[in-house]
Length: 462
Image 1 (cartoon, one colour):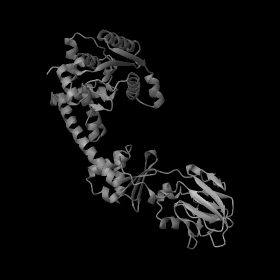
Image 2 (cartoon, one colour):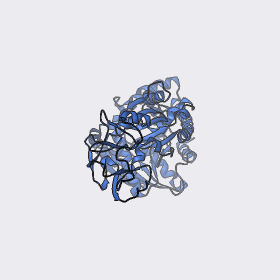
Image 3 (cartoon, helix red, strand yellow):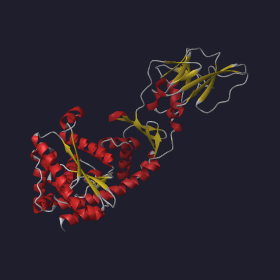
Image 4 (cartoon, helix red, strand yellow):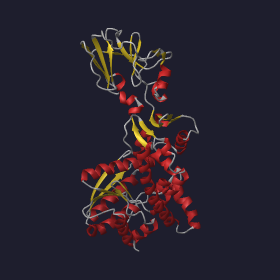
């Protein structure tokens, strides 16, 4: 099969470009992208698509970079394809964002591609990744200890991005250009072995070819098989996550009994789906906590916490504690200490106002010792909950099954004599309404559902 027919077959097999598409082609000036642009130009009328080109000058190779740019501009002019040229300080961007030159170039390239595609009204971005690139990516991911997704290689499509050359080998691309007498640029940085990809390309792949001369196509077939299996497992994972996880204010609440019924493969994927930033070891630790093998709590990078609780497993962000400095509240008035809202209202009447919901409490204003304040717990905090005796706040929170991760950030409504209401737990017996109460202080905390784990949303993963 000729390269032209192979690319056309890939476009149709994967539904990459269809009638009416407007495609923006990324052209560096190297063999792969020049070949891609030529083939798409030959197929454009047959496919019913419109082409534009984009070139990014990375400003890394001095005059050579401008020769790349000139070649792309002249080629597009000869093919009658409009071309957008931009430049970027990749080295400066890498330094500022602490990235390698490869990572910085990739980030900027895709950012500009998205911007230009939107400005031109293009609904497809076409890149020239080929079978060799795919094999190198698989091998690099294998060296990193990647899972199935990484070993699936470069996806043939991702969002607007499509890759029609993914089945073509580099030797066939160079042969096509030689047969059509088309010049292209050689990037000498591709020979530098300090770049990991170049080391794989020039050292590892040649050794593998001694074992199997068709190693590039063998890896391509394997990656396509793994990609299909990965997609199948991803669907099963989303289905499992909808069954075992529900949204919490700062993360997820997981039914551990249901989670542990699944195969370990799905268990790992569910955890990774909920918190993508977790490493392999992190996911193993979460599952160890879920099964009861590793204690009840774990801390991870990015302020992520995992906590075993009576009703299951919490996985998400550690809630930032309220300021230890008490926030004085206006009475009456609306107050927003630490991001949640407390509304205090005063009514003079002979009848007790009705409660609007579980996030509202009513106190006898004549018994309350103003000013009011809101704070977090302190060592030695004690109060008498409604209908009970004076006890340690810690013991009350344990009895009310307030998760350990929430206790240090639980807001306490206090007057000058002590705690009136552990918001999300219980109110104090003090300042309760009596038959002779005539002035009522109504307190509504609109964020109480965020503090009470029993009120978490029942929505699952979408």
